[in-house]
Length: 248
Length: 248
DNA sequence: CGTTTCGATATGTATATACATAATCGTCAC
DNA sequence: GTGACGATTATGTATATACATATCGAAACG
Image (cartoon, rainbow over all chains, first blue to last red; front, side):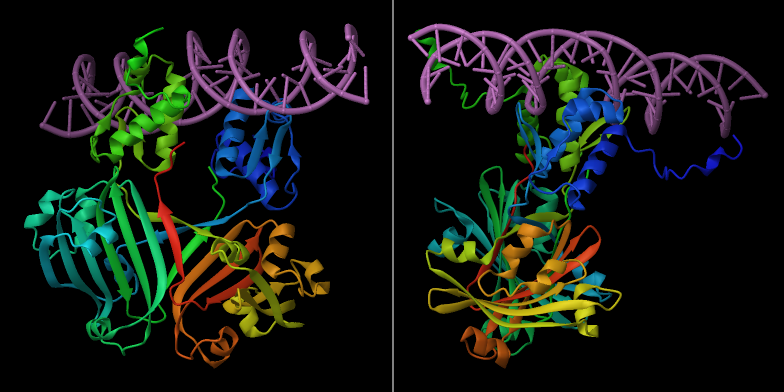
């Protein structure tokens, strides 16, 4: 307990053994040391290398397999996989958060609200099969004095009955829904769009200006909940999606 | 073995026990039966319910925790978490695949190729700190007779030396790189853009038309590899991102 | 009354073990 | 040669067990 502290092992945090195996192997794969197709050591070899039981190694390798980094074949071993499709994680934040991240004051405004029996168009947007009551909303989100985004939303009242009595004067429908309805699936469509007259007026931009449009459909346990279309005013507004191979 | 087959249990595939626990619980959470904040049964209770060992239950719950559906607290139990940020998975396919999925013949064309010492702009795009050789490429991707996408790419030759001698006449740089360089991280930026003269000419569209632009930066084990900007011609071109809570 | 200590409890991690399952290899009979 | 078949091998799944660790709550104590 004197000078032996000079060991150059960087302890950092005390990683659990199975996490150490996991990060060891993913690093070797991602650095290219183990190229795609390479057979990684058998469980019993790793058992020896890390001096642990097969269960621990197995848990780590199973996780790597689930993350898509390796492929496991019985009797043959485990092999480094080539990433097939570039999948990136797109974080879609609440607009208030986005605006406040820019350091600007956020303001919300409800433009219109209609309760109606779903039209054919409504049903197409919500992917509803049967007719039923829906709530149609139109809102604006401001960053400082300027309109930041325009929101057109449909809520399936059969799935969210409490929404029928909500005016959405003070609270935006997004956060309101998130707080109430557990959502099990969502689909986003992203595209470029030339502002039409209505949108241009609402966002105080020129007609024909390119806008980023994000449409989201949300389900809660098989039931369509809501469809929303956000149109962003700022031409330079960007969405960011990252891919970093799943670690733990 | 006669009429007892009328049991309304849908067997489907023989799920492993721990997968059954997993999907059971996630369904109860996503359907709202167990609301956010609800304490789910203790491991020893689930052990009794499913008549299995604690290890099996533990494995399933740990997975749910990693997927972010529940939060585990020692001594207190496991609780349903409120989804905090909407994260969706964006699949970014190779353009050839995208075009062929539309049922159209795909064609690739290299427009320009320059090898040069990196400019300040190049370094900014690649997030390079030091100067070094880069390869700048400009390409077009066709769907049938019409231009589908325009590609502007920079390759960091310090990281991918073999690219220096490649002409990219027949093969697009995307698949070429994928086949050679293991990438460990990628960042995508998505935005709407009004076509300038150069892009409009390359894509055979009108100047000022709204285009979807996807920029991707790729790293391989800490080294910047490539930066690419795709500009899509078709105004109705959409990216799709899905979120479905991680199952297995 | 406040603080400290300690036991109970639920999860976290690892082991040794067992048997199932899939795939490959070698052998042997035809 | 070749086709069938059993042995071998690596992974897949589950169990019982053990001990570590964080934390809550209640009893003990100043």
